Amino acid sequence: MKTDLKNKFDKISDFWHPYIIGELNENHVKLAKLKGEFVWHSHQEEDEMFVVISGTLMMDFRDSETVITRPGEILIVPKGVEHFPWTKDGEEVCVMLIEPKSTKHTGEVITSQTVEKLDWI
Image 1 (cartoon, rainbow, N blue to C red):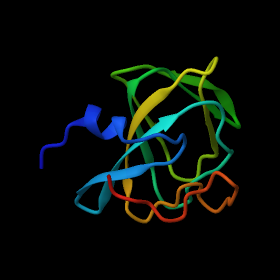
Image 2 (tube, rainbow, N blue to C red):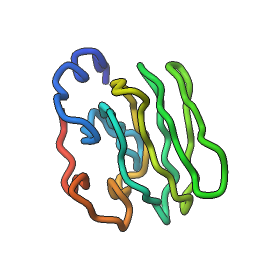
Image 3 (tube, rainbow, N blue to C red):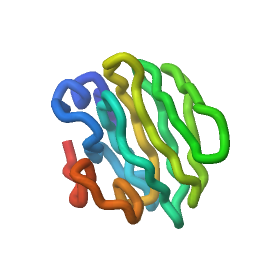
């Protein structure tokens, strides 16, 4: 299945809300726009992969330094690792997420930013 990423990103107007664009085996392929700060959370049973399409993704971890991920780079967060994604200086960051279909948006943490039902675009 061929997908035009620019066209899909153009349809996203809210931040920190992932949208499904495809399925790959037992995984969802998702797109999201990020801006500002998200929430501390972890995924106890699933690894999470971020592919940065544009902008710079900052990721804090409880027990290590901030990881900076730029366009064309990926960041894999292992299952069970608490992380805090954010962006610098109001920059909009576009990412692709590849993760198991069972992955909850904010793990077991529920906040006003949590998306419980993901939509396809």
